[in-house]
Image (cartoon, rainbow, N blue to C red; front, side, top):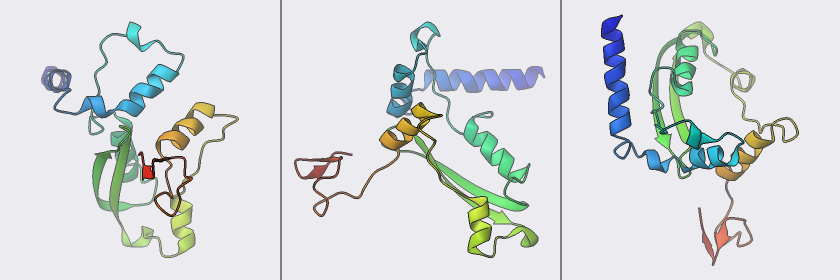
Length: 157
């Protein structure tokens, strides 16, 4: 256990000391959410941004749920890439190889596994507003000059 604790401490020290290399300042969406909430982040201490690959992060736990808990079916392999988008929000591309007997074969099979829904604004207003502001965009451009993101004839996003 001492070796694990030492390794984990070294990983955390690296993350703390290399925030600029990790582009932690690009997590503006996260910073905006903290500022907009009722929590006072300034009293917590120094904010250190952990990468999505860090053990225990939501992304790491999702990948674990997919491959070990088989929440989408039996998998035999997978590849994923995490990207940081314009507002600092994370975006994942996940490629999953299913066991032959678990592969989706119809549109209904895929729809049963995957869905994208906005949170209910009455029950989860903050989540709904955050997704609407930070994650939804388009159509815009010359064909849609009245789109909310258009400014002086150009998309401001």
